[in-house]
Structure formats: structure tokens, C-alpha cells
Length: 450
Ligand code: 9MR
Image (cartoon, rainbow, N blue to C red; front, side, top):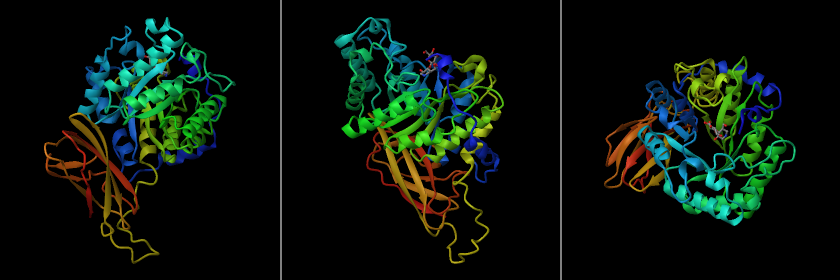
């Protein structure tokens, strides 16, 4: 897409944003000190689009590894990069990003299997059934190559028209038949059953004709069993955010799909920090909003150039927008009340820890390795700290842990809270994760609270 179109967002800085500003400024008692830690505390990921040739830039890599626990290739997994000649695939950039992600405890969004832009020239010259077959083969090959390593794929990107029609955009792919999108989703599911499959688009930041067209497609897919798991809202924003931004996310979530903020960047200026905070709060308020990705690391890495649209300046310093996002992530429900003051109306509430805790694990596995995400939930009296014990299968070992401290790396391993996520109110949750070699299947976590 071109920048002009990306900024065609409508709406005003509405009540939801103004009201939320006070929340963003509230101090956070047990605050995560990085975006990834603060987001993990809320059960979300915080990601960035990465240009792999910048991974060797020390400032860039330092900020990326410290702050983000999810990455997406800004260009390297697109059709022109992965299949430059028909049937000849090049995964070098994508593989490099996946291995960087593994080494740094990050999940990977895949972007994008099919799109009308950044097609290799051979595909631009095809039409009809030859294009359809080539496109489906592309989906199958690429999703198979990265099988087990992608958290969510943008299977189809930007297929809806701007303006008031609410219909599809004309493109060579659209001209192969209206069912091209569902054919792509079915092929992606068959190739990588473990990846969440997303539809991704821009100018969908509120309830408008375009987002409603997509909403109707998702509802239709769900009713007919077409495999779709998530919708990506790019959120390339100007100086305002629609007042119904959160309501729009929620109506998609109510269809039973995850929603993700996939390419967030915001025009610089007085409202930048407030708009970033408003987007963050909206995602936290929608339980099926699983994460936020910003479209680049530093202002100078951004496709939006002089808009200075990102969270870090060109030297890698945190901007006001960064602090606003971090505060928004840390604000609200996951900061438990002080444990020193007994609840006045319930003197019989036991001290923290006595209500115990529970833990559950979700695995993302590939041949020879896995990532385990563990959710810890406090019992009836909250926790001051927790320990989760898991026995790894023979031959498996932990290579990397985030948001917890591991003792041991094979056999029975104990994971203890870090400073910011030990205190949980009754029923509240924290998440941590680890990466391992071998197979992680069959692990049963047990939780003990203090
Ligand atoms: O940031 C990407 C830029 O480097 C490319 O030149 C451009 C090519 O169209 O794509 C940019 O990323 C786009 C993304 O893939 C899809 N949504 C809009 C993004 C910004 O244009």
C-alpha cells in the first residue's frame, strides 16, 4: 500500500482516548520494565517488523532483543522474496529471522502468503488457472517450509477495496475467482495445521465500509467452516484514532477469531503517544486481542520516513510514545492490591499463597524443538510468588527461558517467577515461556504458590 492510503483514517480523538489518558499516567506497582515483559504479564506478545539486514546493527539488535518477543519479516517472506522464479524458492531471509527469533525467545508472525503487491514479475504476468495454481502452490510450499515455526500467517493481505463499496479490490488474484481467498486459507491449513491463519488489512481501524466487508467475509468463512483463526488490523494511523477502534476489534472477536494489531505506526505530533496508548488499551480490553506488532523498531527504520512514526528515535532512545505504551501495558488489572493491607470487609481471606495456583502449557513444536508457553493462575488468595515444576521428556532440554527463572535444563525443571510477575491477585494470571530442544510433548505443569 502507499502512504497516502494508509493515512486515510477517519474519526476524531474521541472520548475513549481522552478518558484513557489518565489511566496511562497511573503508576504501576509491579511493572514490567520492557514492552515484552509488560505484554507477557498481560498474556500478550509485543512484536516488531524486522529487516533482517539490520540484525547486524548493534543498536537495532539491542533494542529489538530487549523489548520485543515477536517478530515479522518486513519483506523477506513475501512472494517476490520467497519465489523469485516460478518453482524456485529462496528462504534465506525468512530462515534467518526464524533462527534469530528462536535464539531470543520470540514468536514469529508470517507475512504474507498472497498479496496483490510485491508479486514476482513472473506471477504478475500470469492469469486465470495458471495464476490460481501458482498462487496455491506458493501458499503450500512456503507454509510447508516454515511449518511449526510460525505463530500466525497473514495468508491473504489487503484484498479489500478502499472507499465505500465494502467489496474486494480488483487484482490479478481476484480475477481468478472470488473463492481465491478461501482456497488460500484451505491450502495454508493443510500445509501448517499449527499456525493461526489470519486475514490482514489497513484502513480497518473503525467500523467502516471496508472493515464491514471483511467482517462479513469472516462471518461467512466461520459459518462454512473455511479455516480462519485471526484478523490483523494493520493500524497505520495518522493524527487521530476512530472512537470505535475497540468496538471494531470486539465485533470481530465476537465472531470467534483472534484479533491482532499487526503493523502499528502513528504519525508524529502531539497525539502520537496518546494514540499509541489508546491502541494498547483497546487490545488489552478485548480478550481475544493477543498481541501488538509495530511496523519497525526505530523512526529511521520506518517506511514512513519523516513521520517519525515508531517508539524509538534513530539512536534507539525511548520516545514518549514508548513510555505511553509501557504505562498502558502496566496499568489496570494485573497490578494486585498491596498485600500488607488486609481487605477490610473480609478478615477471613487467607494470606497470599494459601489459595494455591494452577498452571497450563501450550506447545508450539517442530521437528527437533519446541516453544512452551505456560500460564500461571493464582488461586483464591493470590500469590506473592510462584514456582512451576515440569518434567521434560527424555532427551529434551531447555535452551532459553523468558518471564521466569529456570533451575536445571532437563529432567525435572523448576520455573520461578521474576520480580515483576510473582504478585498475582486472586484469579489473576501471568505467562512465561521457554524454548527447548527435542520433544516437549506430554509435560504436565504443577504450580505452588507462596
Ligand atoms: O514496510 C514495507 C516496505 O519496506 C516495502 O517497500 C513495502 C512494499 O509495498 O511494504 C511495506 O510493508 C507493507 C506491508 O507489507 C503491508 N502493509 C503495508 C506496509 C507498508 O506499506
